[in-house]
Amino acid sequence: MARVKTYVRPMQGWWRKNPFFVRYMIREASSVFLAIYAVILLVGLLRLSQGEAAYDAWRDALTSPVSILFHWLALLTVGYHAYTWWMVSPKTAPDLYIAGRPIPELLIAGGGLLGTIGASILVYAIVRWM
Amino acid sequence: MKRSHEPIFWSLFGAGGVLSALIAPILILITGIIAPIGVWMPPQALEYARVLAFAQHWLGKALILAVISLFLFHAAHRIYHGLHDVGVHAGTGTMVAAYGGALLATLAAAWLLITIGF
Image (cartoon, rainbow over all chains, first blue to last red; front, side, top):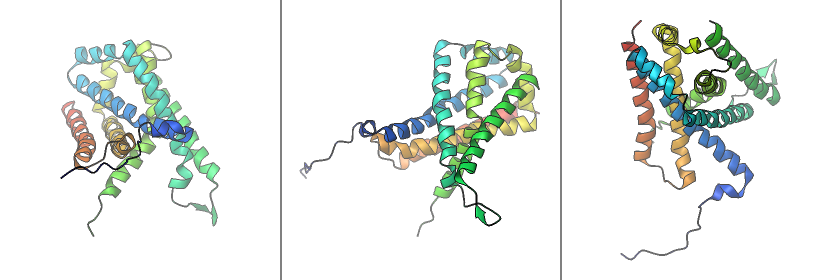
């Protein structure tokens, strides 16, 4: 059967035309960095199970410039994901009420952002001093 | 009507989203930047004996498994649904690759955590 040649509107680079979509794509791209980071941790776990020499080789690989650059990009994009995650949380969270009144959106989003700051300080303190 | 499996993947996506929003930036900063370059984090902090002890503790095991598994299920969900945005039409193959990859990594992490011992 002959292929029908109807006009299909090209969608190449559609998201570059609008800053809102650019931000959307950056947020979605954060998941690629997050996935690669999780795989790096999984490899670290594998190397940890193989003994001290293997684990030290893994740590050594993390000092390469490519690795440092990757982690900077991951930090920026995943940090942006964290910010957007909490900013949208008033809309994704179930309706919450205190004394019959809905909790203000600012309180929910702000609470999440403060949660990230608090959890970050806690993780840093545990890794460094515990 | 066929029951949707979306709620399961949505829950894993949400759990991974919350966990990564809370601690992924600081974990990336510690393990990927400040510990490797040796600024604001002494080299002993992530030395073999210490990390091994962490991975042998039940709480450490739970945290490691949660981080690896939920980060990947969160990412799998976003990548799977985001493929459409870059012109790849999602189907059974891409779905199996995305969620199957996350599941395999979860099983691998669980297996390694068992072999590392208690």
